[in-house]
Image (cartoon, rainbow, N blue to C red; front, side, top):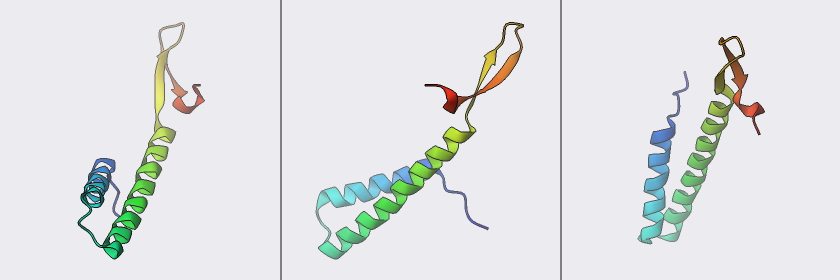
Length: 76
């Protein structure tokens, strides 16, 4: 079973990698490896956000006062 990826934890890891790269203490090979890890984490975050956007719905009251769902992505 694949472990569910947590957005906040993934962002924390990405921030740590960015901090390591900004320090400049890594050699070239380490920097490239960290950059590749960061790119993978960035793609994971984008995927998580895209999946969340697909699930978001907005509840609106119609003219009779009843709640109805409206697809969030349909809004401009």
